[in-house]
Each structure stands twice: as structure tokens, then as C-alpha cells.
Image (cartoon, rainbow, N blue to C red; front, side, top):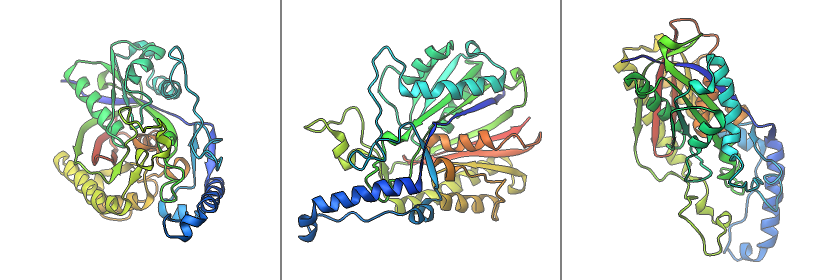
Length: 373
């Protein structure tokens, strides 16, 4: 049995930013347009009027201040309210592969590896642009990696579940060097016309290189253990699958075909689930709260993270103990905890331990116990 390690990480950040103020202007213009066009039905009580949004509401509800996206033009057009993502020919790399190249390149450089050292690519993400051929195999091709590749989708826990899969294969000796890459293009699946969720998501891509600890060429994190759990729930759902079609063929007009959630139920059910999951993982690993230097949590909502941090640490964590990137990136699904890990791990000393933890639709929870080597 071999000991797996994370030897490199990378983040691709789109160059387009939408601030809360920009988003609110666009949404409110859309709401005014909708209310004017449906004035009679609204007056008759047949249609519900669209309320305005505000930057204060967004920050209070989520802690989000801005988000990165692949296209802001369509999102900020009150007549469109979704990103313009042109269809690509079969001969062109897909948008997820394009996003993956920079993140993978950064992670490989940090690990001191070349693409042809890689013998496993897992594309672990919640929003895939097609069912097949696998996005991972396309990424493998454009990277120039060897071995094999496959896609994985466990919604917001995809990256941590991917890390567990790669770690298990490294332990067993079936692979030597893996990349877990999460190109999360969440903007295409978000309902930008819904006040309760129009601010939640952003686009990004993360990647981690994993290999045998004995093969590491520089600073790295030993993966001591992983733990995954799932529990079915409809409280976070996206029906925009390739098997679903409307009669007119326009899924954009079907509210139930995009991201929906029962926010209050999610808070009530997910918070104790995640807290208990991490506590059990810590107990099995023989790790006390006083031995944890860092929590890299899923970046979905600041209130949720604050609650989980207090439960795990037994106190209010210091900002450096539980770094947040939510305010800058918004919710980036499975990539969020990996962004936090990539940006806030260099300061840890040998022997320092921390948890990478994700949670979301499914429900799903994934945790990874790592130690700076």
C-alpha cells in the first residue's frame, strides 16, 4: 500500500467579474419589465410580481460580494438573463476543457510534473456540458496525459469524492499520478431571473495533482484519510439533463429545469449532517479540535460555514483557521473548498493538519484529512 499525497494545486479564474451592484441593476430592470408586461395578470392575482433585489440583501443572505463568469454580457442583459456561450464544433475543445488547461498547468508546475507523468484524469464537477464522450478524456487529450480518464458528478462534493477515488487508486498501486480537475461552469445552470438565487453561483476551475508521497518533488500534503457520505434529497435539484426536453425545445423557459433549492430545509438538514460527518471523521482519525490548523470548507454560504466551523472547533474559528473565498468567487460548487485550499495552505508548517470538506446536493458530504509533510 502506498501513501497518497496532494503535490500541486491550481485555479483558473475567468477574467470577467459581475459585482453585486451590476447584478442588481440588471435583475431589477428585468423585474420591472416582467411586472409591466404582466400588469393585468398581477392585478388579477394570477401572476406574482417580481420583487426587486439589492446588494444589501445579497450580502446578508450569502456573504457574496461578486462572482467570476465566463460571459457577463448575456447575464446583465435584462432581455436575456443567461450567459452567451456559443456552441462549438466537435473539432474544437469544449469550454470545460478550455477552463481546465490553466488550472491543470498550474497544478502540474507546482508538483514539478509534466502532463505525460499523469496516468489518471478525473473530471469531477457538478455541471457537465455533455454526457459523452467524457470531458475527462478530452482534457486528457489536450493535456497530453496518459493512462485513463473518467467523469464524476456528485454535485458540490464532486472534487472531494474525486480526491477519494484518486487516493484509493494511488494507495492500491493502480495509478501513480492523478489529476482531479473541476471545471465548474455554474452560470449556465443558474436561474438568473429568480431573486432568491440569482446571486449564488460563479464560474471557475480547480485542479489538484495527487501521487505517491514517496514520489513528491517538493512541498506536499499527505492524505491521511477520506470519508464520503450521501443521503437522497430533492431540496437542491437541477433537472437540466440531456434526457429532458420541452415541446418547443427551449429549456431556458422552464423554471424547474434550472437550479432550484429549498434554502431553509437545506440549512436545517445539511448543517447537522456535515458537522456530525466531520466529527465522526475526526474521532476515527484520532484528531482533536486542538490539533486542527485549518478548515477548507465548501463555499456556499457564510452563515453555514460559520456554524460548521464553531461545531468542529468548539469555538469561533479565527479567520486564518477557516478561510473564506465566497465573497470574491460566490458559490463555485465543488471547486470552492479547493480554491480555499489552493490559496490558503502555503503558510502551514510540517505536521499541521486540516480538513478539506464539501457538502451539497444529493445530499453529499466529502471530507479529506491532510497533513503538511
